[in-house]
Image (cartoon, rainbow, N blue to C red; front, side):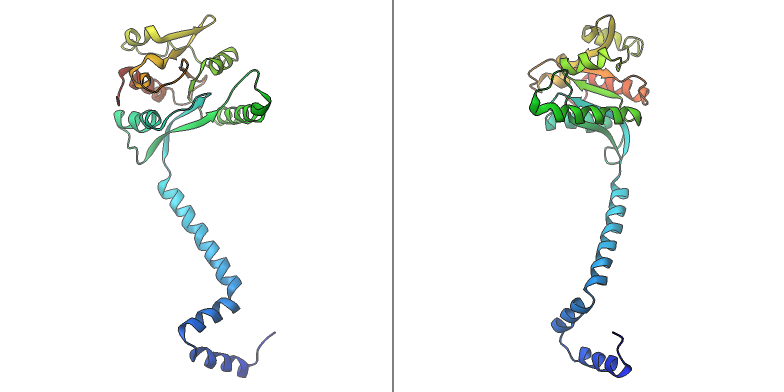
Length: 222
């Protein structure tokens, strides 16, 4: 209902005579909706500004498949590589897809988990946002069988061949993974089974992926 001029003047006079607490209560009571909307709008703006300010450039995308990677190793696989390779960890990152699960025969309780992981992996591949896979034997067999891993010997620089040759692993006739469990970076991680590293087919950031393998081979950060 529209107030008359006299009513508006009376309210202004009454408002001026209120103490601070009463004024705050009055404003909140009569202007609650616009205040709430303004606060939400401000929060959204600030959130967007914060995300933009803290957003990091992705140097590589890696997936942890059927593995639980501890904090110490995870830090070495991210910040350790970035620092060793001359990147600024405050502005860049190795993006890790954590806790993905692949299985040919998942148990009933893990069926949805496996299905969701497959979808995430396919979406990442379709978007060109996966370069490396760190995985157990089961996940390695699945990726290899489906042609998702590149052959490694032709990718590796000649200087790395003597170091990495003992770790090269074949699945069938294709040498497409490194058995990284024996590398210095992984020896103290306490994995209960063998761990493999593969480069995903059509890896969008291949030079960085090779640089990453070199970092692992040299045991940087240990």
